[in-house]
Image 1: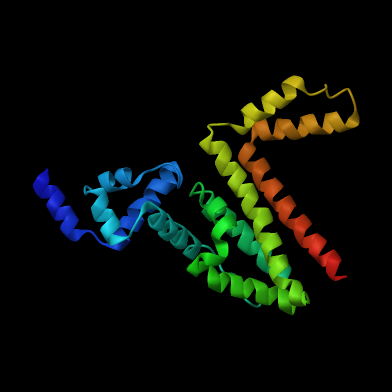
Image 2: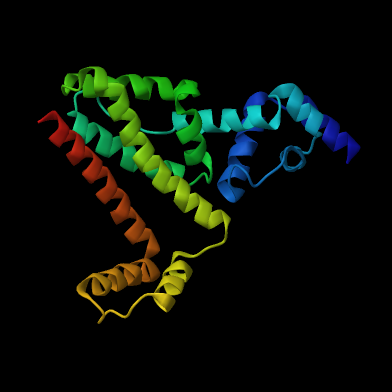
Length: 221
């Protein structure tokens, strides 16, 4: 065991450390593993991981950097509406694989180096679309509205909550569908979460993005 550990330590690189942290994040979420867990996966010691990449927080920053680098940066030829719909929907599919990264992006997005080309292109599309000095605010609104939905989905997974369980709890104390048209609609909405939460989440995500885009279009007019 000691010889194998010595060999693995000799071959360890920053790229291997971050790749292993990505795998752990995909399996457990970014807050679901420790530096000791990462070192065990690499068959080495925590201080060796620290030597190659840094503290756990620095490893997490490298994970976020790598995840964002995998996100689509759509063509600059697209109108701003299509650019953001494409970026946010493709980004949703990437981020849902790595629990907790969306929340970190809400907090640290401008400080992630691989986000810089995406930000530059997104803000440029908004400037070309007529937003002028409001382009950075519009960019933040579009991203945060989408990222927060993904972050909430991550939180529910981390808490072990099935969407169907949450829907059942709400239906248990909500007025019956016959009480009012509003409750009939709400029960149908809750049923859709219970029957196919992933599809309903995707629909809710698209609805949110479309509404924010539509609201910004109305502001321009």
